Length: 103
Image 1 (tube, one colour):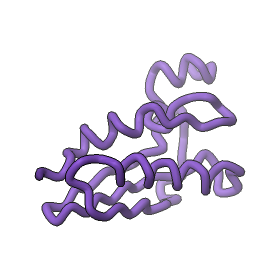
Image 2 (cartoon, one colour; image 1 turned 30 degrees about the vertical axis):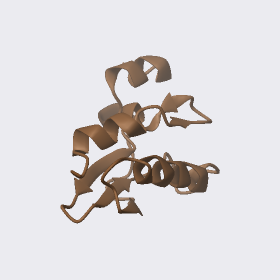
Image 3 (tube, one colour; image 1 turned 90 degrees about the horizontal axis):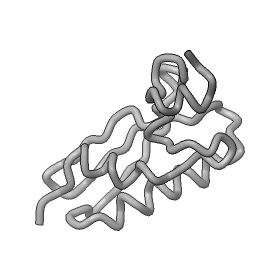
């Protein structure tokens, strides 16, 4: 059983939305990296819109749950990082920028 690729993990995370902004965490640019190890361990490096995000724990839990449910995944670690700080002007997708009014 193969461990999912970075692209496959990102696709599973795509439907997870930030409840305040109502845009997916992938389109917001909150998922910085995904590392899949041959052992079945998957690491997701992500951030939040702000350190005081009231939905932070919920988002981290949902990311963990969705990745853990993927075939071939034996262990999941969600790593919360603050460097670089999230900047929607450079990290969000064009669709997210349109919704947020960033041109």
